[in-house]
Amino acid sequence: MSPIHSIDPTRDWDDAFANSAYIPGSDALPESWACRAAAYRAAQNVTCDLPYGDGARERFDLVWPAAQPKGLAVFVHGGYWLDFDKSYWTHFAEGARANGWAVAVPSYTLAPEAGISTMVVQIGQAIGQAAQQVAGPIRLSGHSAGGHLVSRMICDDSPLDLKVHDRLAEVVAISGIYDLRPLLFTRMNDALQLDAEAAAAESPALQNPQGSPRLTCWVGGAERPEFIRQARLMTDSWVKTSATVSCEIDPARHHFDVIDALTDPHSALTQRFVGKE
Image (cartoon, rainbow, N blue to C red):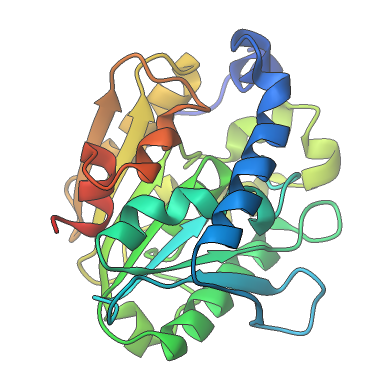
């Protein structure tokens, strides 16, 4: 694993992670996502609120393709571990669904009610439960905090059962955060409640892969520079390990529209996620 540089505590890390401040019209996006997701659920074959635990947010939706699924695809939402639930994101399953995959979209308990380590365990439980519903290979994707969470599934302390882990074919982490130590110097850490030990333990870039996973760190070319740095950092950290890892920079895409390509069955992002039809 490549050396990881120390973190400069004097840098304005709040600004480094401030996506909305640099994307005009971003305040209107959550309502748009929620409306599009609700319309999508009404139009597709979706089994909602399947439990993977006893917690109120330990639920996932499962979007079914028209025929026998090729396998299981999972999309984990972002929101800095602080916001949103599965109900905002269902329509981003379309690219994978149209390519013949069943798509699980889980919720998880948010901070400050839960710490990031708990969220990692929850996503592992959600994947494990969905894997009991759908046979075949498993492909994971997640955006922002979700990118972090899916990349934690392939670290050497993965919460996944080994039989489930062995079914993993691809992980596409979109605009992820892989070194959590800068978050120690942000206001959001008032809710995340990370300390130095937890930040290091939950940073995929500071861990080793389990087995020989395939990981793509996908990021928009118009994102805040920190997200591009994080994608390159993760790639550099694992490039000499047992993992197959690459960094893909999507030109002109910012932090919020970079995932739009998941709704297109033919996009390069969808094809990386679930492969060709």
